[in-house]
Each structure stands twice: as structure tokens, then as C-alpha cells.
Length: 191
Image (cartoon, rainbow, N blue to C red; front, side, top):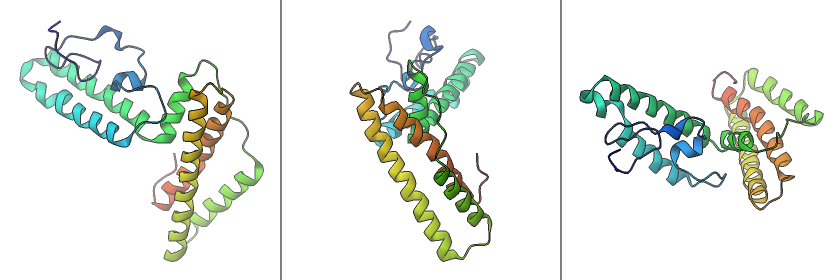
């Protein structure tokens, strides 16, 4: 309504007018980012800083309850979107959800599942500090390999190879196990 540039397509951070098309927007749309796996972490950091600068509810404190409430809702939506895009594995899941075809999870191979069971059992047992470091290093290496696999597969998908979606789904499914191992090594509950 005021013709100002909006930081995010949620509501105008100059006059407070609603942006009617925001319902049903993807996380990428909310943040004004291209729908792609290959997003530079610096770009995400810039979007997050812009979010804090322009949509923080404290900025709207003295401009009425309606605008303050909109700012809270906009910041919440932008934070959810950042959560869906910041982590490469969650970003890949978000992209899978946006595909026109459903890519169901496949059954992971028994040797992989047995390996994960052994890793979890070892983590739950008392560990020597050196072994804990070794496990952390192995988990990080596995996650890095899966992230590289995701990047390569998404490049193929964006090039028109829809069969690469199966590789993406497999990498995302495997990452859940490795990320749970990573959390357990930090003393956090698996998700």
C-alpha cells in the first residue's frame, strides 16, 4: 500500500499492510530465496540479519497492537522458514515436499541399519574420550558425504533427471540416523 520494498513477503515492514499471497508459500518463498538446494550459507546469514533488523517485534512495539502482532507472526513464519532451509538435510526434505511426485522412503539396507544399531549401542555405553572423538569424526564424515551426495543429486534433479530424487530420499533417510548419532554423542536426545 505504501510502495516500500518489503524485506519478506509476509507483511510490509514500513506500513504494516498484509501480503495476501503469503498463505501456502514455501519456506523459500517466505525468505525470498530461489527454490534450490544450492544456497550459499552467507546468503542465509544475510537473510537472517535482515529478518532481525526489519521484522523484530520490538521494532513495532510503539505502533499499535495490530502491527506488533503481525510482526510477531511474520518473525515466527520467517524463523520456521529459516529452520526449513538452514540445515541442508531439512532443506532437501523441504524440496522433496515441493516435488510434484511423491518420493516415498525406501527400506534402508540391513547392513546400514545394523551398523547404526551398533553405533547407537556403543554411544550408550561408557566411552573413552579418544573413542568418543573417533566416533564424532566418523559421524561428521558420514554426514559430510551424505551432504555432498545430496548436492550432486539435486544438481541432477535441477538438470531434469527425476530419477535422482530416489538418491535424495535415500540420503535424507540415512542422514536421520547419523544426525541422531551426532545428537547422542553430544548428550542430546535423538529426534
